[in-house]
Length: 273
Image (cartoon, rainbow, N blue to C red; front, side, top):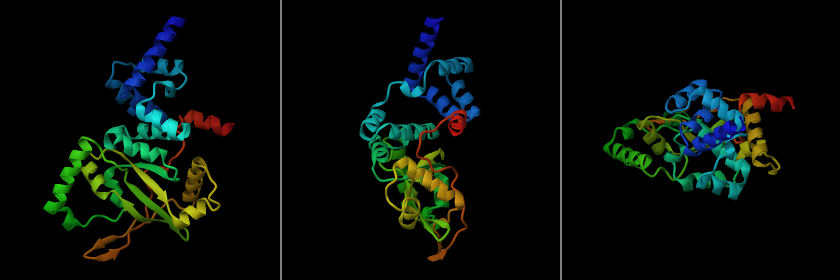
């Protein structure tokens, strides 16, 4: 029996090191999305029973061999940064093809406090000022997007899109952005979920971290607590014929996260403690 368990442990490590679909299944499990788990397993030679036995015999998939990028993040910024990166990978299966290793390394090892969220690229302009429709139908724009699609499908981009989050009175507001062309290229190439950096600025930063003494985990918790007071964010305005038009507030498609993702059962257990 011990030999069987050892062989299952070895198989689990081998499968995790290979990447998808085993990691995809683990990511689905951590999200509580069993459809995602089953879809991932259907692309492999693993049965659901194999998968369950693997998870039951190995203490966390995080003990599998780290990739070069994971090792660098761990060495530069510690285990919490590595867990954050691994959570991002579980939520965005294409993450390491969408962006260059350096872009991801720079993002997850930076010292500035920030949040992350996941959305479809087509949703980015729900918060950033939309590109002008006339410009979007121009040959210049279409050529640029085609070039960006080539980058997205080969090397990946060298920076993750971001939104600057402020707060005026009681209303969260997006005040600036970076990444409309990149997200347009992603949207034109399948609209698979991507990572967006949320960068608190000015009054929002002062509200959540008035003494500038929080660590990253405390900072993210404070942002989510502040956002819970009013989760609706006012997007940047739209410009039509050079006339500014305000837009109605809306919620982000997903949470702002920073800590490691835990299965629902572990979260409940942690709360009980």
